[in-house]
Amino acid sequence: MRVCAARPRSRWLPAIAFGVACSSHAAASTGNEPFSWLQRATGSARTVNYSGTFVHTNGDRISTFRITHLNVNGEEHERIEPLDGPPHEIVRKNDEMYCHFPDARTVRLDTRITARYFPAILRSTPEAIAASYDVKLGKVERILGLDCQWIRLQPKDKLRFEQRVCAEGTTGLVVRAKTLNDQKQVIEQYTFTELRLGAQAGKPADERSKFERRVKQWRTDKQPREEARTGDTGWAVMSVPAGFQKVTELRRSLPGRSQPVSQIVLSDGLANVSVFVEPNGPPSRTDEASSEDGTTTLFSRPMGDHLVTVLGEVPLATAQQVGRSVARRP
Amino acid sequence: MKQDISSLMDGECDPREADRIIKACCTSEEHKDTWNVYHAIGEAIRGQSTAAITRPERVMAAVAKEPTVIGGPRRNLLETTIGRVALAAAASVATIGVVSWIGTQGGAPAVSAPVVATSKGTAASAIQTVGATKSVPVAAPDLQEYLSAHRQVPSADAYRPVANATPAR
Image (spheres, rainbow over the protein chains, first blue to last red):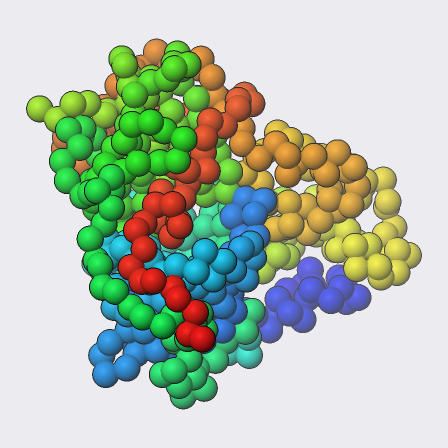
């Protein structure tokens, strides 16, 4: 730290020295057990009661959400309210998801939806995540007034991005998360800006939609629309990247397309990749195309009379491997 | 080493890394110089006394050497101290939001269908030799629908209603 003494006017130096001291102490007291921290972080988003506001930054886009998550008698209740764009709310009870659109005055549901929001971004088991990522502990940092432990998930290969999640010390809840590219640049971030834990999170009525009160009568209908049925699409990814598994496969109609689109979803427990196959044109595309923005990578390629499009939170090379290996199921 | 010092200052290093960087920093006049310049930049950004910048030409040179914004589609400008300087210094940065989708076109490598192996180990090693093709701007075709489908964004168009949302009164 002699260099530090050379520039006593800098405001950085005490902070660095303090950080080093704190981190060393914390590493010793926790016994340096990265995997057990990952276990806590993975389970806490389901079991802990919390409510607050979080900000998601991906590429140039920033969005803000309010979330309430309560575990009542072993059942998960969650309400998410995007605070940007047209107002709507997503209310989840275990695997059932309801979406409230106040403008359209409709309430919609699809039980096949497996989407989970921050802080439930560790979608798989700690064992599955540790199969593709080296788990290491980072520094201890004070965030939102809470002592939090950074966990580094460093990819074992170049097929996926590095992830860093910061788990609150008492509950293990992920309060901040970053995704880094191979240049160690942060390309996506989630962070709570306000958080209440445990009994402070709210009471059971808080996870119910405020729009729900306007609904007089409920009609149960859990069938997905005919156009979006899960099933065999006839297509397969022949070269699934190491660590990834097929999560689902379905055919769905998309606005602006006259024919259904096949979608295959792969996941490694952290990153998802969607493969879309549809008739090529008109006008038909003749060249491969790709783009990268934040963590979102697109790769598109013509394949005979069809067009293959891959979208996922993976490096471009991974999307290319997936897209170029799509073929008719044998 | 410059990247290391920058990471240290941005609080991105774990204790072991920080210790190594600080030690390495002490051993070289050049690294000490980098350290001082980066601090001077930080102080200038925060509007602190610029009297501390004894060698402004070094600071400006360091700023000029930072990667051009347009050349790095994934670079998060706000992430580093130097990035913030670049943000303030370069008027052209304002266009970065427009060029959000950068693409490759006609740049397919000679290796088509690179990996047909089903073994996980083979697939992992093969992809590293494939690499990614380089980027040129291309129009993004109908991406929003794909993005919504990929992220499972609930959409009024995509799912059937499950309740008659009759107003309670």
